[in-house]
Image (cartoon, rainbow, N blue to C red; front, top):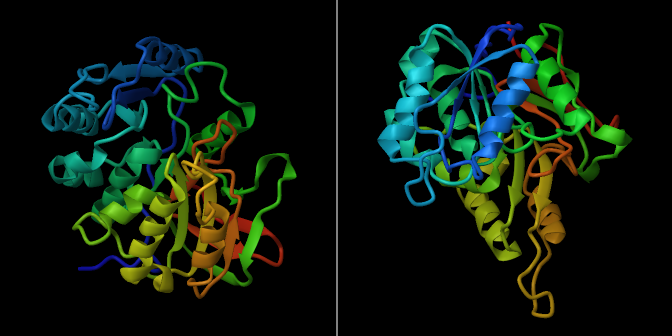
Length: 320
């Protein structure tokens, strides 16, 4: 059965409360140096939470934090620990798609928890929505943003979403920074997406939810323009761009050409070009992605995109 993003009812995890146990895992790469893990733990404990570390969070197996079985063991262990109320990825990196076939989705569906991370964790979030319909949080991570002096805006917005049962409201850029208008219009749909490379690589697999009628949210880091072009072309050729209700473009950080003196297409040009292949509204410059000051995006919730008002609004809470 295909899950349609436009009509599927979201499953919300219970909100976090002070004293709750948070599980920390490394589904992709190892956080280095070790002090980033320790700093993330100290940060969470200082806020009044208890912390449980996965057994393999600091293990290194090439560019991975342990073998596929070890990384999945940590994640599944947190799923099956009734005391763990949230599972935070310490960092992204590489390798999350490798563990998708061995995640215990049925156990997670029976005991929904807050799942948070971004970048390479995108693949896991897409799979969790496909298999469980669970709302997940694409936002800051303990060994990336939280281990040392996190940005106050990033911090405040994240914790409000995972601890409060009030409606998310408007997803607003900090400092009143405006969105870029690529296509006018107004549309609503379930927000799904994340890192462009991970979205593109998940298309066509059993772990990809339907994006028909969705609000597709995308960001990227460290890819040359021709690679960004290739990834968007994959989404176009797979019929994804035509099927979405709207698209939100986050930050495409460090995506400059290797040699600007050689002929190239800029990422800015490519974003504008591919935005025209979407039938609905498209806004860019969403402060979301690989930047210190960022929004947390609750994947799985319905958002309304209104370009005339320069507004992205979610009229329900992200947690129960």
